[in-house]
Each structure stands twice: as C-alpha cells, then as structure tokens.
Length: 360
Ligand code: SF4
Image (cartoon, rainbow, N blue to C red; front, top):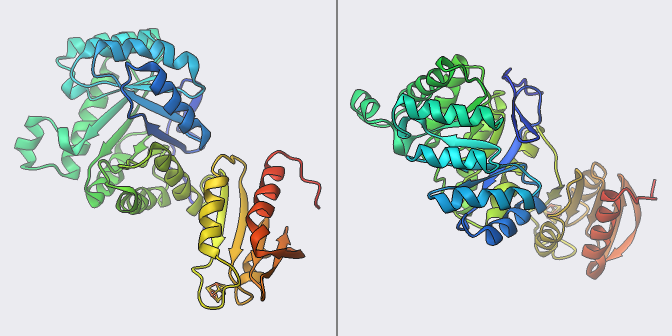
C-alpha cells in the first residue's frame, strides 16, 4: 500500500523545505534556557546527531531572542523561535537569525502587532507557524464551543491564517494540537480539507516516553496514513533525543522516510540462542548516530530467523551452543559467536554507512 500525500504548498525553514514533495521532516525542541547559548548549542548538536531536521527554542524574554544570534551560527539545522504574548520578541528573534517564528497570532495582540510581526518575517525570509493549541484557545471560541474541540481548533487556525493572508503573507504552516489524540486527529483531518498550507503534526503534552510515543504513533500515524502531514514533532517528557528517534520510527513504520537502522527483532522465547534483548538494546544505542537507512535482523533461532534475516541488510539467527549464523545481504555468510554479535553488526553497519562496504 502506498500513501498518497495531500498536496500542500511548500515553505522554506532556513534551507529545509517543508510541504510539497519535500520529505516529511522531524522536529524537536530544546529544553535548555535559550539565553544560555552554550547549553542550547550543545543540546541542538545532540539533536543533530540523531537526525533532527529542525529545532525550536522558546524565547520567553529578550535575552533568549537575542541569544539566537550566537546559537544559529553554531549549529547546522534551522532554529525556530517560539514566541508567545510579546510580539516584540518575534521581531527581535527574526532579526537575530530565527529561521521561522512559531506564534499564535491570537495571543500576540491586535492586528497592528500581527502586521509588525509579518513585516519582520518578510524582511528576514522567515515563515511563520501558526501554532493553535487546545490549552490556549481564544476566549471567544471557548465561549462559542463550551470547551476545546476539533471545530474550535480549526476555526482558530482558519481565522489566523486569514489574518496573515489578508496582509499578503502566505509563507506559513499550521499546527492544531491537543493533548487528546482523537481531537487532534479530527482537527487535522478537517483543516486539511480547508487549506493547502503545510501542516505540522503533533499531539501536544503527550506524556512520558512510553505513553507519549504510543499516543503520538496513533495520532500522527493515523494522519500520515491518510497523507496528512508535512513535518512533525513527537512531544515527550523525556530526553530530547527520544522525540527525534520516535519521529523517525513512526515515519519508518509507514514507509514514508527511512533514516538510520531499522531493527527487525523477535520477542524471544525459550528457543533463543543468545541474549536477543540485550543485543537489540545495545545495537540501538551504539547505532543511533547512523543516518543511512540500513536494516538489521536480530533473531533468536531458526524458526523465523532465516526468513527475516534474508530480507535485511545484515542479520543474525541464533543457533546452538553459542554458535549463531551471520547473514549478509540475505545470504548465510559465516558462524558468529554470541559474544561477537554486537561488534560484528556494528562494524558491518558502520562500514556500509561510510560506503566502505566491500562485501557483495
Ligand atoms: S525467532 Fe525463535 S527465539 Fe525468537 S521468538 Fe521466534 S521461536 Fe522464539
């Protein structure tokens, strides 16, 4: 089954295209104090190391907005400034190198202030993300709908998009996030019918690593399956790298984008020939820096091992007495001892990633 993506127009966030036929990008956000440029730069470098395409920094004060100047110079990926309430911070962030402004025009103030933000965005080639959030809907919409709901999120987004378009600004993308997965899905589905701008997907405040990943996989996965979504963030209360790794896993599961290793592993049972769980955990950790799409099968025994290993770039199938079978490009290659499995697979993957692969 091939997913047909919704046709959206494209905007540029720095040198990264979002929308149109561009790959679906994976975003994250820093949680350091943005004004502390050194810590923020270090964290963005960590995000870059696991494939983050675009990051975002909160700018709650002037020092933070000004710190962007040093931050953007030191990192490779575009940095979005996250602004709330004070439109002047958006102007400072745009002038200091923000590649995009995430604002909620509804909480920036009157139209005159929104116009000032548009002017600064235009002067700096900066798109805007309209970030509608179930937790900060306009009062008039809460009065109208009684509580946050998909229709209220969509109405807010459409109104805010109109505000930008009425002022001649079309370089925007939109998110309509809620912490309620079903509400999020409904809101994006409705919005996708109404506008052709790129959509930034996310289930907001999704929770910790396990619950948040599952909620996001269901919410974002349902939308992506129907072709909706041009960029995404998995919001997790966890180490910042986890959001990015989870984002790629969602895209990989849907065959929408492949980055890094794809592990096929069995749940293990009494038939396993070696410690499959520890092997997978260690491989995921040791190979998280790999960008090239490479598949490895880590299988416990001959029941399903040879079948899975024959479809992966590299594979190991558990055998008896600590003697396991190594597969390379689908063919059984040699025996490998249990204690050598991890180093053997790491070497093979790293060599392939560097195009040093001599095994044909
Ligand atoms: S592949 Fe073998 S070890 Fe793994 S779950 Fe299946 S039967 Fe058990």
